[in-house]
Structures are given as structure tokens and as C-alpha cells.
Length: 420
Image: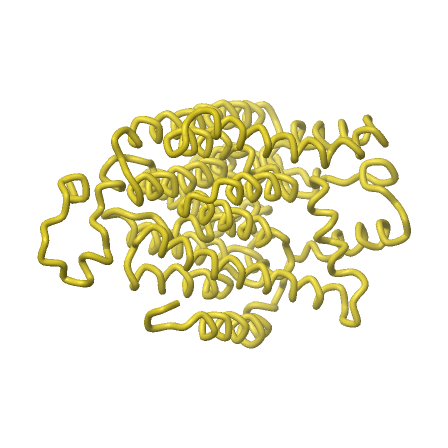
């Protein structure tokens, strides 16, 4: 950072917050961890077992590589995994800073983007070091940086890598295709998308060849998952339970606690349909908003569309585990326009509300108690608000160049950069 906070200071702050407060008191009490699952998979792979062929594996192949990176180290598996997630957090922060500069958001927003990422673990809790979602955050940050700086090979490569860790970035293909088309034309855009999809498929080929049934089981696993208890659809039904005492049935399956029955099944189907509509609608909104825009306005629109798509996956997905909120880093810290600062505050609120019930009151939520249900409902409502704030619309592109504003440039801004 060329301004008030140097990059070395940002890294030092991230390390300090991770190694001291995150390891004490509140943050370590009653932790619910996925480390045993990751360690077991790493042990099997270290002994020669192949995912999908020799044992069931619910994640894409990239996740297997992450699990192996923490095995074997001189430290315990949990400590090694935590160190990997710290590295991912710091990489996300540095990429967020670079992207904020590429978007010309001004020094205050640059600092906020970097500091916001490294402070986030204190807001959401110790789940950051026991889940691998920060690796997806790095991929999303690299995608944003590549797109904002015009390095589309980086953007498409980050999308492919992220999808091999978690399938989530596949939903970003429509908006990245639209944006790349706007910048470089159809031939390069289609080539970029084709290259990313080809890279994604090629990594899967050996696993499909070794065990077609095992890889099919992976796909079927995710298709068959019921309505997870923290999802927005489940929050709607939980709210009805708290207000009107409608009957609900909670069942543990697929590695989570879920609502089961005809009602939850219907909500799950509706949610999936809504998600598809939202992903398409965001791509269309981006295409319309991009007409006549130039850098950095068009890049700001793409960042907003990325944020909106990620939030749509959270709001309309049938699974919303607490660690999924890490996907909001750094996208929600980089939204330009008049709602940018508000979006940062609401994102912080969503992280805090998540920690308010998880892990301390999670099992009370499973027992359908009113207080954690209320917190969950409010948290999911904040995510819906974030979707509205992030929706790509022309005034985001027309935000003034913050560097011009902070320099006090006497020349008037072009009309396209004037706020509504």
C-alpha cells in the first residue's frame, strides 16, 4: 500500500490477529471443527488411496490437494491447516488491495479492503481456521484482480482453480463472459471461457476414468442434499415455527443438520429455481449496465455483479454453512458507488450475526429454540439486503474517480462519472 498503511503492516496485523485473539477465550470455546474430516482424507491419500475410487469424497479434486498440503508437517495437522488458512487470508487481503487500486476507489477504500479482510476472522470466529473456504476467497480475489486489471488469463485461471476447490465459481462464468466480451470482443471471451472449462474438465478426467461411479456419486451427493438448517429457505420455515409453531423435522445427514419433509423439499426446489433465475438476471443486468461504459467504471460493474452472484448463491442455495460467508471476502469490500460503504457495514453485521449463533448456540438452533432462530432469520435478511446493494446498475459505473476527488482536481468530472 502506497498510502497510510504499508503492505508489511497489513500482513503483520493479519498474523497478529490470527495468532493471538483468535486463539483465546471466546473464539476457542465450543468450537465445531471439520479438521478430523480433512485429516482422515489426507491420511488415506497419503497411504495411496484415491478419492472417489477408494473412498467417498464430497469435494472436488482441488480440495484433496489442500488437505494434503497440511500432511505431513512437523506440527499437528490442525496447526498446519490453520497456517495454510492464514496464508490464504493474507493473500486475499493483498489481492483486495491491488483490486481496489485497479478500480480507483481511493486510499480510504484501499485501506478498508485490506484491513477488512484481515479483521474478518474476529467477526466470524475460529471457523476460519477449521474450514478451507478461505482458499476459495483467494481464488475469487484473484479473479477480481485479473478482471479489474484486464488480465483475463488470470481471471479465467482463477475461476477454474476456484471451481476445482469448490464448484461455486462455475456460477460466475456468465458474468465473466459478458464482461470479457465487453472488453475484448466475442472471440477472446469465448476462448477464455472455453479454456477455463477445459482446464476444469481435464483435471476431472483421471478420476472419471478410474471410477465413473465414484465421481457420479459425488455429483449425486450434492443433488440429493436436503434443505440445510441455516439456509434462507430453512430460516423462512424456522421463522414460521417460532411464530406459529408449525411442525418441523430436523435430521442429520450429508454431514449437516437439515429440515426434511414435503414442505422443506418444496422450498428446496423453489430455491434452486430462484438461484438459476438470479444468476441469469445478474448477467443480463451486467450486460445492460456495461453499455457505453469505460474503465474503471466497467470493472466496478463487474465487481458488483460478482458480489451479487456470490450473495445469490448464499441466499438461494439449499445449503448455507457458516463458513460460506467467507466467500464475501473480498467481493463485498470492493463495491463502488453510493452503497459501497453501507455494503461493508452490512457485511460486517452478517459476519457478526453468524458468530452470534455459531458455534455457541448452534445446537440450540437444531433444537428449534427461538433465540438462535431469531438471530438466523435476521442474518439471512441481511444477506438479502446485500444482494440488493450489490446488484449491478449504471450508477456504480458512474461513481467519480476517487483519486481525482482526493487530489481535489479543479477540472469537472465527465458526465458519466457523476453520481445519480
